[in-house]
Length: 207
Image (cartoon, rainbow, N blue to C red; front, top):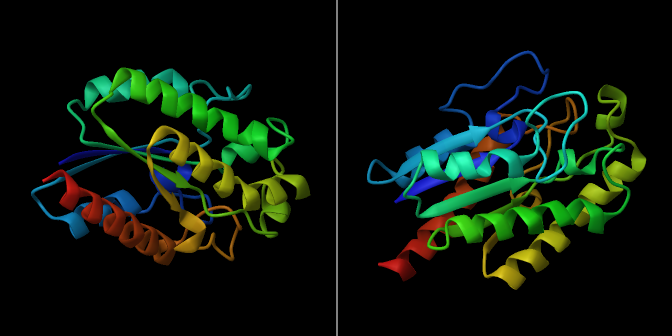
């Protein structure tokens, strides 16, 4: 099976001190590869600051909508597309309601299903922000934290509406004590295990 992990800085593997990148063996897509085995191929496409569909006025190309068609074509054929988002969609300058934050994921899923109708989609709702983020990242405020805690429910509704698989990353891992925004190595490991369980079970139904 060919699997594309398409996400933000937590797919990229940004360290919790923001100074580097975890090695592939520690990032959740790399760990997913190890868990699934060599008969599967896991591709990671993570970008710091990426949202589902909202442009960033400070950095080019941060809307996942802009580059998803390229990613799908580059890595075709794909059996699974994992959309791992939510954190950046909660930034204060971008949205002020959970419904606004979720709309981008719905748009992204619709685009993916139009471009790659035979690819199974797994929506992964980001682990919620924690209060620590307010002291280290000025892009977020208290409402951002509140929205992030509710977003998984909206993503779950989207998954049900469009026939996608779903995982609430917050059920498997917490954002780190260091910044309240990114996963540490333990969080990446736990997320990889949760994703592997879902994919493994779904693959049984496809064989």
